[in-house]
Image (cartoon, rainbow, N blue to C red; front, top):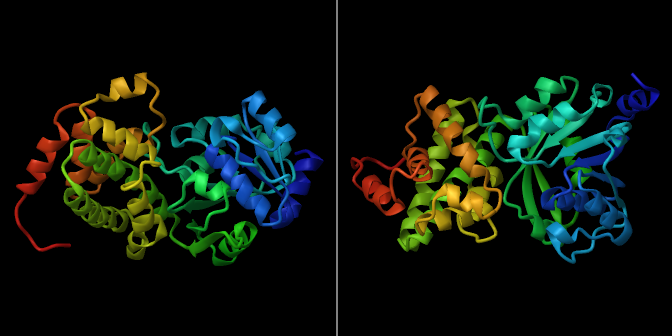
Length: 342
């Protein structure tokens, strides 16, 4: 191991902050860390984006004219991870394994790694923290999730999120590194439940967008959100998470935001599905990344493997596969047996 990597291990929480992923969310998280009185290195692949951040303190491609803190520098070199005391991983859920494996082994030292993608790996059903540990066993994983859009976060609008880990003291350190007057991370000790909530809300956002796109009304959408919250809670508990997580920021908070806002990529994707567009068509025109499309079949497999009744997840998968229109799916759900709410 190089002396640079050894200094990283010794530095611990006092080391520099590195954010992997120079898209909208990664840039927003870099801004958060910088506003928390930290020097931040933002690692990206696009040389033009990196050059612009360093020269102009903007990321026009993803964030328009929004000015970034001068405490943020950007690089295409993974080697800058040497000496990091905290790493934030801000890449799409289906790219996490590729990115982590690409980090030179000598740089995968003992360091805190906060995963921020909301989704499950399609081929393995793995959670984001599981992927990190599979290839970076010395890392200490944490999970950041909750109701937050990059545009709000980078502009300094008030945002509250969940930051989860297993060790209370370590979670406290992570919270203190990112907290500011405009960005408030609430500590959680249920990283499993927080990750499940973050992935599942994208699936339900597809359904809510489809309801809107089909013109089925706000009452139907509100009912769907309520039943999604109940279904999410059943899955979280059955898979080993804490019951209260579904009602927190990472659960109900993020579910409500993603299921009601046009800023949500999953909601917009669902909106077009509800208007009769196919998944293939929407992917072909480059509508934008909707994590719920890849997450839905994984969520269905999880529910089936754990014998959890999940009619809404089943419905979203039928919609994505083109088997039924959202209007027909809602009619089917309305004909389910009457029973006590819960």
